[in-house]
Length: 173
Image (cartoon, rainbow, N blue to C red; front, side, top):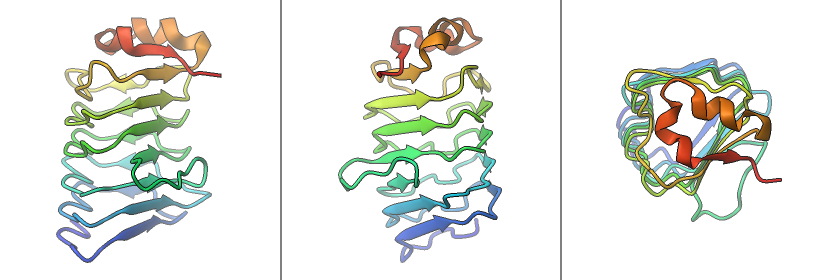
């Protein structure tokens, strides 16, 4: 609850020394519009139970792939991230694009529940991350899930990933 209810908070910068964001750290920070990761980020874990639950129009930009269009809400998680906890972004329905690093190994149950306006999700890892709990980490049945071309069948066959088999396809070249 480090910044719980900070309605005057509009921009967040996660520095290179931050390794974990605990649950509810930015809960009810409804005016956050910019969330930036350090170029040499060491972020490994984003806690569950709403670490960014109820954050308003969060637009996360990393130095890897940022966008200049404020109407597009995008999260490009930095390399080094290994875990996204249960319900970590449970109310973040406005996110349009997600990109996960090759280091991600686990996504908690319902981590992105409410993600309904999704346009694309990209996984850079050849191995699918473990999906915790029921394996239902987001709700959309139409959002494309892009993975490395050589890993499409691996993702489709992985435990709990079969729920999304029709959405899994190769990263466009």
